[in-house]
Length: 256
Ligand code: AP5
Ligand code: MG
Image 1 (cartoon, rainbow, N blue to C red):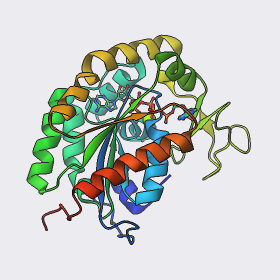
Image 2: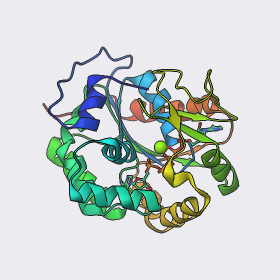
Image 3: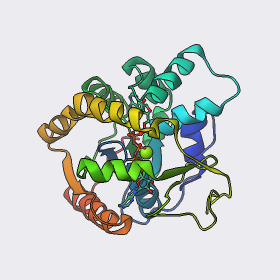
Image 4: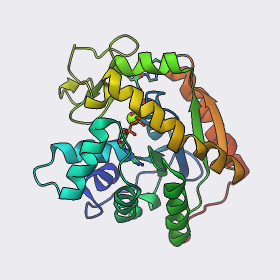
């Protein structure tokens, strides 16, 4: 989990100062992670961020952080209630939140957007925000997995209450039961990982998020990645797709 000040800037807002780290590759990486709930986007984001020093920008983490915050606006309270039912938060709220944090899209190491965009409207808003910033998206990595395996992954998931790291009771158990390996905070089962909520999330994904695959394909920015196998195998596939894209466009793509 990247707990750099860049990530804090995403979770808490743009006022948090950022310190650039040296980059391991020739330039920043800028990707969107697509795929159904539970396919392993967060798990892969942890690895990709570690490898490429990009900033992990998860809209789901934003809403979960808001759920625990002391002062929450009425709009954010409504958003958290949507999340707990497995429904999508309104485009307006999500786009405003991302726009408020758009400086994170210019992070030194690039970004990994996880859970945004989720609708065509959000995808168009992202295009507009990136255009305003003079930043070019490399591609969307779309993770694919048969639905029964996805449901099995969600049922066993445990999430860290401190740093949002992701575990699984069978495939990635923590060293000490119920305790995060990284920050020692307690692990919890997400509200939206109940069986009936999982069903709602899968339906919502098919209806709203599925069409994004075509959207990115038409823009020539789609990389399909099989999410079968253990997380390290999936990471190697994702990394190859990222390096392939970097080779296509080696020049820096942020306008100063
Ligand atoms: P969000 O937090 O984005 O959740 P999601 O898309 O439903 O995806 P998940 O986080 O559930 O799954 P994941 O793919 O990250 O899988 P993970 O790595 O954890 O969004 C939550 C909610 O917020 C939404 O439902 C919505 O209400 C709201 N929201 C957020 N963004 C929004 C937006 N843009 N617009 C509107 N609403 C928005 O892995 C799952 C489990 O599998 C883990 O236990 C893991 O250890 C295990 N695992 C992972 N990979 C493997 C592997 N290769 N082998 C075995 N086990 C594995
Ligand atoms: Mg996730």
